[in-house]
Image (tube, rainbow, N blue to C red; front, top):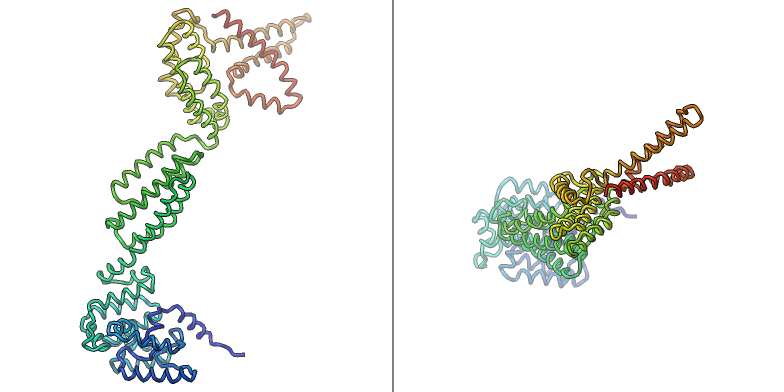
Length: 562
């Protein structure tokens, strides 16, 4: 069994990822340096043809299999390599990415490099700066993916026109008609074709080079964002969910690309501003379309996520103003949204208000509104609590709408029947919980005016009201219970204090009837009695009898006062 050296395995793996312009460089395929004489190139070519003709492989010292992927030479490959070096401009292009030998130090360095001692070769080239030492260090660095070292040496080489002229002269002589000023950009363009620009750009110090590379990087990024915008735009008219999904995908898919673009261009750059604003507008429109068409509890919050992101990426003042206007509008809507747990009740109440607003300003419609919304308000009250701000706000909104009908009809025709209906509506509205500001500034003032009008016409007693009859009926019932208890306690000839005290306690229950009559959480009382089983039934029976006695007393009091 043959064992393979681990280092060889690693070398093969690394070699496979080197730049194509290095591993398939025609100078390498022909086994020569870039400035080798033509006769040496021809000799190597003939040798390869002879070996290949008899089916034998051929290799040269510059194959460098320790660093680059091994070459499998064929007749076609050799012929192609020769063809690539037919023109001076092509010879110069491939020379940018291969070794050159012009000094005695180069001979020593190449001996080390061919022997697999790259670091020793680089040490020799670092001792003296020449055209060949810089070029050979560039190639060595590229073989190892050391882009920082390669670009540093390249900037030094191409900044020195003497070196550049020597380079051109060594490779193609003096009649090649190659522009020496274009060589550095040819070198950079070739790098960008094979290496991610983001790996190159951080290592470039030359401002002109940086600008040139940035252009290479910017256009693909802008194209990527443009394509993503076009895809999102196709979702228009396909429904709210399609627009939401398009906006979310557009936001996520372009986030990294936009950040890359931001690292290449300042925000003041017109190119960046144009594409950022275009991207922001499309995401913003996705949010607007979704909000306008969707009807879900969290629609506004989902749309806000898109709109806030859009506002954060746009640059132009007009774009910022438009995004801010939409975000501010949506925020006001969100501020007025109900808590999620009462979303269905809120919708039901607003539907009643919508239908109510289409009807004439009549008190009868106000009564219907109160009756239809009361169960929903009670449900909200149970879920959120009596002091919850949203509950008080929606309850005040309902009462405010009902009150406006009462005011409108009284102002239109304040005859006695209308006034009595308005007063009865007011007593009904008294049972609703209200915001303090609305109650003090609006409701109470209108109530007092209406009450005064009714009292002046003798429609109600000056000191009477439905609310007054609540406690008056409870007081009468309590007194009746105490009197009955006193009579029973004294019946046997001696006064039984226990019976008397029981009558006081039973009479006190009459005050609970006020809460029941006003509808204050009656469902919770019923639920408590139902959960008490037989005891609940035993308690419920006398309570019902007492309650109807209380209602009878209230009715008599109202008759007397009216």
